[in-house]
Length: 156
Image (cartoon, rainbow, N blue to C red; front, side, top):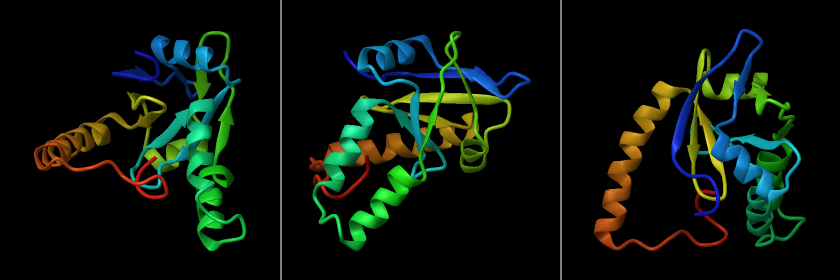
């Protein structure tokens, strides 16, 4: 399976660095993106992260709107304007930025959560609560035979 799958929790070192899980680094290398593209999730106290697969999905969503519309302006500001591209050092670590720490509440540990074409960066206890809620919602969606979101709406 390609992309980002599973979840991993790693410690933050004294310099504010954390290692990206090896399987996620491998997926980023395969993607060819230099660094790690990140932005605050508009839906969760998490940060969405990835490479070209994520930026392509963002652009696909934006392409559904006129470039001079309020919708385009709001989405491009939230998904591009509030973003950061973090450098990955030779040991596979990133420095957690102020944006990441403020949006997620991360202190000493980070949970990386695979979501296929992207992954999320979470504070571990917040992720545990979210995972429980997501499992309940997934069960409800699967039980009802719910359809996926449309191209212009819904989560990334």
